[in-house]
Structure formats: C-alpha cells, structure tokens
Image (cartoon, rainbow, N blue to C red):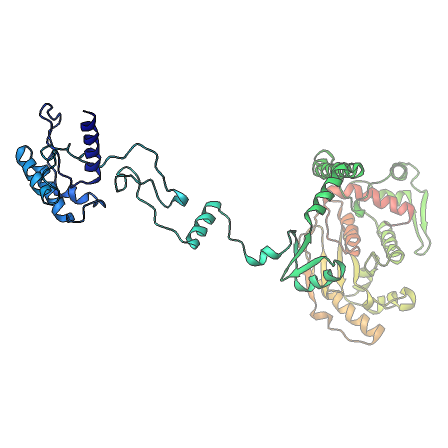
Length: 493
C-alpha cells in the first residue's frame, strides 16, 4: 500500500505538470464523487503549454487526444486515452487502465508565498497557474524616466526647479516700491544694496538679519513706548476730527455783522436819547467848522420817528461821508457829494450852468468831477426827497426814488451839466448825452410817509461803499439813531 500510495501521488503530480498525461481509471473499490465535466476546446486553448512534454509527442496531438479523452467519460474515454498514451509510453505499465481526476474548470491560485511585483505601480501579483488573476487589475504600462518625473511633480504640486535658481543664494526678496526709471537712478547712489530691474526696485536682505531685527524690535522697551504714543496720538487726532464735526451742532453760529449795521453801544444810546428828548431845543449840540453848519437840539430832533429830515442834517451827514472817504480812501469809492441846494440852483430859470460854475473849482475841491467814480445829487421835490447819481465809472445816470417813481428830465439836465462841466474845467468834450439813463432795479422802498430822507441818505452811504442796497423799512429806526450818533460825534463810520 505504501508503494501504491507513493505512485498515486507521483502520478497526480505528473498530471498537474503534464495536462496531456492520460487519466488513470478509478480504482474498482471507489467511485468518483463528482461527475466529470465537459471539457471545451476554448478552455484547452486557454491553458498554457507545458514545458515538460516528452520530445516524441507533439503538443497538438497530445492536447487533442487529452481533450477527446476528457470529453468522453466511461470506458471508451479510458480506452482512447490508453491508445493515445500507448503511442508514446509502453503499454506494459500496470497503471494504464486507471483514470486521473479531472482538471479544475478554472485555474486556481496556489495558497503559498509568492512574489508580488509592485514597484512604482508597474505590475501586480502573478498567479502560479500561468496567467493573471481575474480579480486583479490590469497591469500598468511601463513608464519612462520623463513620465516618472512628470508623475512625481504632479503629485508634489511643485514647479520643476530651474537650473538658474539652483545656483542663486537663498535670500529673501522684498519689494519696496514701483518707481519710474528716472527716480531709480537717484536711489542707486543712496542705497548701494538695492538693485533696479525694469521698473521694480527690489532689496535683497538675508533672512537672518530680518529675523534678528524683528526680534530686537519686540525686546526694545523704548520702541514699544513710542509705538504706544503713536497709537495714542492717532486716537487723539481722530477724536479731534470727530469733535470738529460735532461741535458746530452744539455751538450756535456767530452771525457776521456788516459795518453798516453795527449796533450802538450803551453810552451812544444814552447820548442819543438825551439829544433827542431834552426840552432845551435851542441848545447847540455840535458845530461843523469846515462847512459852518450848526446843529441845535431842535434841528437834530428831526431824526426822531415820524419826522421829516431837514437840509442841515442831510448836508452835515454828506460832509461827514466825504471826510470818511478822505480818511480811508482804499475802503471807499472816490465820490463827490453835492448838498441839497445844488440842484435847485442849477434849474433856476430852466437850466443855468453859470450859477453853479464856481461850486466845483479844483482849487476849492482839490480834484475835478471827471476823476470821481460817482457823483451824488440830492433832489427835493417840495415834500419828498430823491437821489440822482452820475456814475462816471459805468457811464450811466441813475435815479433812485423810495416811492419807485422815475424822472427822466432830471437825468437829462444832469447829463447836460456834466458835458459843460468837463468842457469848462478841462477843455475836453465827452458824449455824456449818449450814456444810459435808468432806474435802479430791486430798490428798497419806503412803507410810510416820513422816511424818504432817511432812504436817500442810506442810498448814498451804501453806494459810496460800493455795496448793494441790502436794507429795508425795518432798519429805518436804527439808521435814524445811528445818524444822530454820527452827527453828535462828527464822524461817519
């Protein structure tokens, strides 16, 4: 039994090594547990050729005979196998009538240690049965050196190193500014460590120096103190800026008071009240020596409300306006102020220039009328005061009536007078008759029957300042008291 068992094991091993080895019939005492399966030609073709075939048996004949023997079960298959085997092996062997077990339908992997080739994912495990395992993935194609380098770079996400950067020293580049080429020339002399490339100025600083400076700043107590003071100053500046925006909301705006509307002081108010309210009406209050005008309390009381202005108050106020101009010539226009008797004298008997010829001599005035910017002529019409203006600067004649009326005849007479005056004093001829004659637009008008003289004086005052007529009826009470104060002080402001 021991010899027989060894022979059976050897035959079974030969059968695995040689698929064309004829199967042995089963022993008479044992039956096959599994029926043989039909063996297709495709499976035979898939099997690899065995390298241990006898030299006298061709592979085609052995495979065909083995396939026919496996396909026909029973004695006929065994006879056919013995016939095919007898051609190459002697028939006198005692095991020619025994059948070997049928081969497995699919090659099975041997559960033993085997080598797996997985270097660089170029292959997989190979089975010892002659082919790749159906469950294993298909082998990768072989990669060249360039493909391998490309694969490594794609995994690392790093650009390939350039040969020029390998030789350069490892320094940190700090971009300072982007400047023009002309500005970079001056920086070369001041900073030797800077390098100009195109339009970008870069500075190469070693990394250890930068780290050392950063650490020294952190340890420097004075520097931390300065940084704190800088932050504190910035917060203070921001607070002041916000305060500048908020402060006007709580602080009322101070109204700018023009000089023609400057309020009176308490002392001035008391002196005006005393001058306008006392019972001694013949008392002399002031005397203007250059014009020889004497102002008594009775004359000054015309500045009270509901009173008409008289000639003495108007003429003295015009004299004060002329003195104001001579005192501050840069602040006021160069003007001439005729008194209230000039126009009456001029139109006596129609038009008489000779009656007023000596009123404007240069020896008496110190200047000629043609040199003035504006000439003011008060016109009294029985119970109403008006104003005529010869505007030499703008070459036009203007008429101002607080009741809104217009007198073209008076402007024509004044144009004729200007022509005769210039011809008499300088021998020149001007075409004043062609100048424009107009009324003033947006003229402040009186709203009662007694403020016409006060409106006329304020027309003269504002025009001599070269200002617009920015007043109205509501200011007349203040203007009356201010005129009284200026006459008492003999000084117009």
